[in-house]
Image (tube, rainbow, N blue to C red; front, side, top):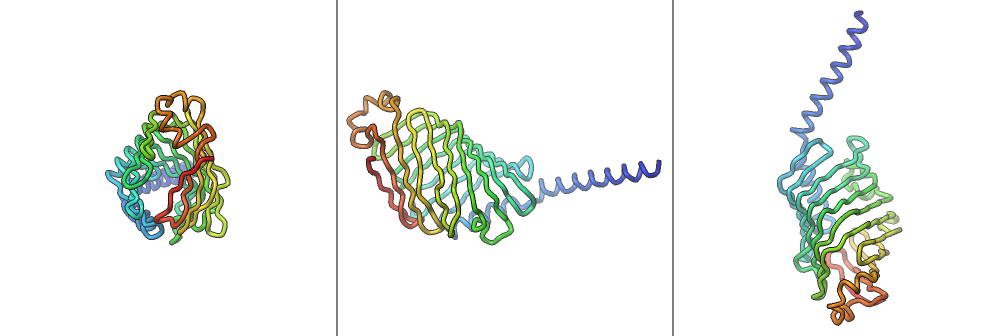
Length: 256
């Protein structure tokens, strides 16, 4: 009987220790320090600043953020995220293997040539990062990103505006070689347009090409804007190329 009591006491002690540790994580874990660290790294490497407002958490791996703003370099604009849920996938206390981010609303505005407003975006990522390293991203070999079931409220470029269409899937696979992330695979599929991505980027340089091909539904839906469409995109599609210093890249458009 005493042996059973000892075993029971051991399990109770382990359970209480786990509860105490969980309470510590929920109420004392330095969440603000992690955001400051992310902001410091982005500012140092890409001249991008990060602002977060009203960070809450359910568990150490699940965060809720009312608003998150990325201020892009050289007054290029800003990316604003609203009502964000972040779920981190952790291997152990020092390694992160991926994430899931649900965003109620995303907007891109400012001096960027492209203006956009999206809603209900589900972004998922797979990779392995050692969070204890001074430069954790240098150790990443492969990255897989995917977006599904999103909706574009509007995208505007050169005075032309596309509104209200659904994103079926976006997937990107990156391979890190010689401190450059190469696009092994990049695909976009939506109600009105499909496309692919290729190229690479590093800490200081980017050269990425996006090819977009419209569906038949695209020209039917925007037939009243055909004169304007003809100067921007034809049935073969359109190419966008982002090239140059990552802090101030050039944005070039051409027909396919």
